[in-house]
Image (cartoon, rainbow, N blue to C red; front, side, top):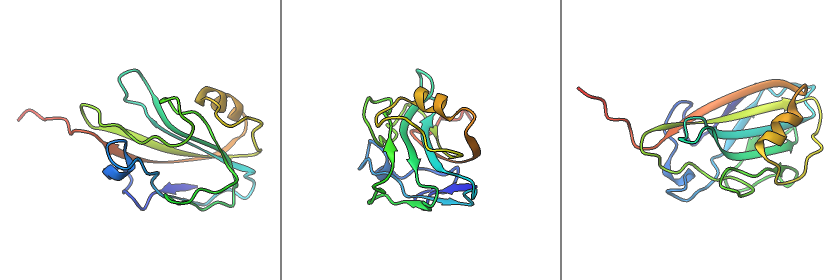
Length: 151
């Protein structure tokens, strides 16, 4: 299974329009190689390098396994979103930290749909996924002020 974004290369810089510094648009994401046994997909976007610990920017679950793309302008009508660490449901892009941080987009193929409600926390989602994950894929982007290197 594979997740990628046409907005940035894996390991590359996330353009400002997909951050809270810019337009806070969701970057388009493409999915490939979804296992045929998958019953739903889940997505978690986070920054594990945040000063207070891992910071969750987006939670999506019960996405159809037939989905091959999340477009930045159009969201599928059949999906549920959880609460990010800004206290909002839906996507909240990176906010410029004092140095460059890495943002992970992790896609999970699950063997069932989850019996969770809209607005759940990341912890609730991760607990519900235990024993149901059949594949995981990730891509990563960077954003923030580059770290000065002493020369």
